[in-house]
Every structure is written in C-alpha cells, then in structure tokens.
Amino acid sequence: MPRPKKSRKVCHLPAVRDFCPEGGSDHRIILTVDEYETIRLIDKEGFSQLECAQYMQVARTTVQSIYNAARGKLAEALVGGVGIRIEGGDYTLCSGEERACGCGGCRRHARTYSGEEA
Image (cartoon, rainbow, N blue to C red; front, side, top):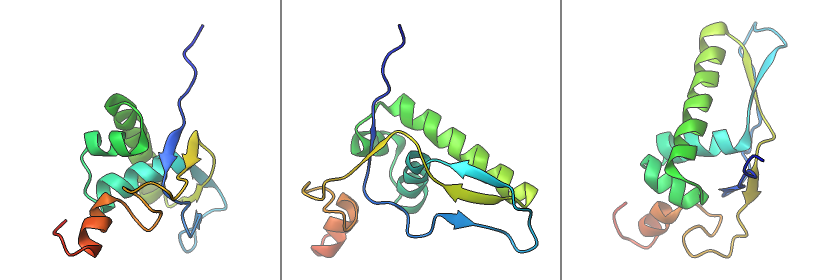
C-alpha cells in the first residue's frame, strides 16, 4: 500500500495564475501551487532546498522532486512559447498565525521588516 501524500504548506496563492505569451497557443502547462511555492521560495526568496523543505513541512527530497518538476515545466513553457496556468497540487494554505510566516512573507521578510539583515 503506498504511503499517503503529505500536504505542503503554502504561504499564499499567487495573485496571477495565468500567463500567456503574446501570439502563443491556447495550450497551457499546469504548474501546481506547491510547485509555484518551491520556485518562489528557492529562486525568489533565496531559500536552500533544506530551508524550503522545513518551511513547507516536507522532506528535502520531496522539495527537490517538486522543484525539478517545476523547472522542467517552466523551461518547456518558455522554450515552446506555451502559456502557464497555476492550479491544483497537494497543499495546505498557511493559517497566518505562525510567527515565521504571518502570510506577509517568510521568516526572511520578518527579519528584514524588523530591521535585521536577511
């Protein structure tokens, strides 16, 4: 019997969920919300895969797998001139009550806002 999938913690849903290149086809590649979150945390926020895993409350190997899948999809969309839609996935939205998140950003934002260096 396979192991049940564990939900990944996501801070917030993306403000924009549909991206389409000018002159592109109507076809969209689906990027899941948890894949989006790994891209956001690792590439935008500068988290290591271990930090990302701790933040999303999953194993580092799970984050590595999610991140590799997301990068492959992004490359396929960019090279092929195909749109991207962000939807679905195994995730749980952050409650907003966590000290490290607060849904206003991550712990690195919290340090920046408090005057500490990120």
